[in-house]
Amino acid sequence: MKLASRMSRLGTETAFEALARAKALEAQGRSIVFLGIGEPDFDTPEHIIDAAKDALESGFTHYTPSTGIPAVREVIAADMSARLGYEASASNVIVTPGGKPIMFFTILALAEAGDEVIYPNPGFPIYESMIRFAGATPVPMQLREELDYNPDIDELRSLVSPRTKLIIINSPNNPCGSVIPEKDLEAIAELANEVDAVVLSDEIYKDFYFEGEHVSITKFPGMRERTVVLDGLSKSYAMTGWRIGYGLFPGELVEPITRLVTNSVSCTAAFSQMAAMAAIQAPQEPVYSMVAEFKQRRDILVDGLNAIPGISCPMPKGAFYAFPNISGTGLTSQDFEARLLNETGVSILAGTSFGAFGEGYARFSFANSQDNLREALRRIGEWVPTL
Image 1 (cartoon, rainbow, N blue to C red):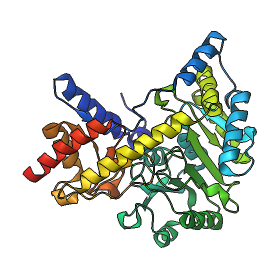
Image 2 (tube, one colour; image 1 turned 180 degrees about the vertical axis):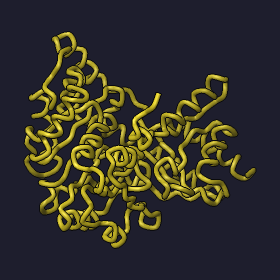
Image 3 (tube, rainbow, N blue to C red; image 1 turned 135 degrees about the vertical axis):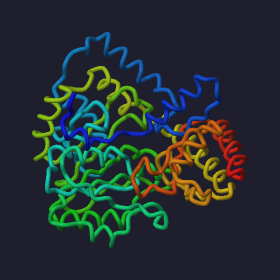
Image 4 (cartoon, one colour; image 1 turned 60 degrees about the vertical axis):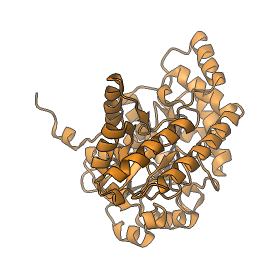
């Protein structure tokens, strides 16, 4: 069977492959500590589950409008208005089955052969994969350790050209846990305005700050009209399996994105939308408690990694990932991942899973218990000196 040539341009998300390898070893009786997959290890709060049950029993089992249930869009818009500091209209909100469709649809709607899309590297691997699939040219924006895993703005300025159609930013960042400083966000906004580029601002980790508070690039002049804000419920409410995300789009993009939704997934599951509405409207204590626990885990993991010779780890400011420099071990990122799993039973991801500039690094998810983090650190601390 001969596949279409575009399939050769489509990458993958290696976190799921790494999880499968770790699960296979676990099935053989090995003790595995899972620090690879990026999802909260908490259960979805009970009131959200109850809302989904009520929705199912009330008949929310049919198609919805492609853009989402109107009442749900209104609730999302009100929440985004409060967070972003300006009035976000429900007519600009589109609900999707997870956050990835917001990335894919935005890139498909805007980028084609001859266009360039700037994206963070190391960064979420699906950005580059989708850019290539759309036929556009991916232009990596290196996140530098010496800048707390943020781009050098002068370097970014040299990457921007008349062919720049889209700039992707992600703050807090996966895999680095970094947060783009407000002055740098302002500089990126000025660049986008200069070349008339759209910005895709991935704000899925907006609730996961361990210091400071979230700032969206939409606060700067001209950016509301040229920014797609990607958000969702997977991380904040431990709802990864519910497949519920949303985007806030400039008016010009609403109709074309709606057509892409209609042509691909039709709509998002009605009961998931009703659960999302309950999550957003309810008191947010479960979110605050989860983030507080993640902060404790962050401190345990980072302090422990920095105590191991050959590993140095900056303190992440957001999300639930640490991105240590492992070059002092003498291993490549891929070898570090493979040997760590096979020889110690600790599952992490190579930095190169997030782009070429991830060489010499690894991603540790601290979405696991404090006891398991300490066990992983014990195993790594005993293993590294044997290399």
